[in-house]
Length: 371
Image (cartoon, rainbow, N blue to C red; front, side, top):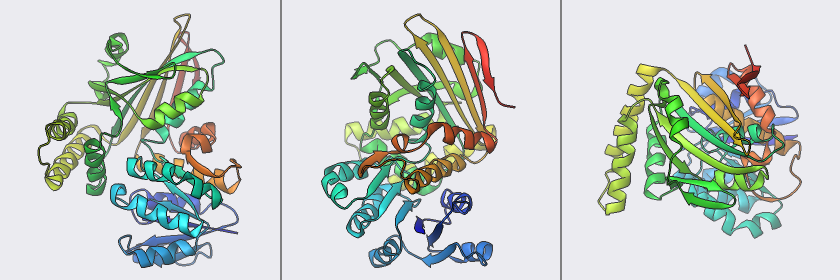
């Protein structure tokens, strides 16, 4: 029997991960939260669950919590303040660790301590949420459907409310320049996008969720492209239905470049309100459109839509990472990304079972569509 610890078990993602993880076999879940009454009222009679009061800013409580676990999943935020602290304790206690964020400080810390992690025979799995996480898992799932060399352009729009802590993580990522704007990855090299593929963008102009698009490439996407040998070129575009969120993000970026002071609380509130207004108008929706091309200029496209809480996608990715580690899908120890650990098809199929829509078109012919 393995003890799976979930830190932040009453949060937006943690509560969903806790619920779906109760189906895992031969495990006990250690649910950690400052507000344990929320969990007790729902799971009072479960023998698969132990509820522990833990304040993520109290290292003594964190040490005690991690000591109970074989594997810890961090669903708390802000990740920029907490992920490295929790990772350090997990490494010290020789406990596997899964983090849902794409925090660069954690990435650098894990890579710098890879020898210790390997020596301690543990696995640290990074970027196990929606973005990053599913944004790499889904194009990998698509790339595995092709034998020939291909180029993928992924357009990503996520419409849903965020917490203030998540907003602060957004701001931290912009300030730390996490990700490479206006760039693509092609044949092993990160390149500046001199000529954005306007033909693809024009195809999306009639879609209300893709009115504004901004290209960038993350370190996770670069690693995924490197490991998928038939993926010659990868481009990623974040999309918005209007300029409101984009303007807030660009204001933070410009102030960072110019060295101006940023009021993080005020910026977080502005971002929070922009996402809230977008969600009130457009509803909670995740939309991904992928265009695939090859040397014969064949252009295929794939639609993925999930209507509902986007946290379900993050929790599903984290669940599949837990499941893969429990089943020893990777035999090595060290630092990994979620797309290296999970069965990508399983992640997509789980989301389809939870109501996601997937349509795949090849050579202008529909080859798959779930009802």
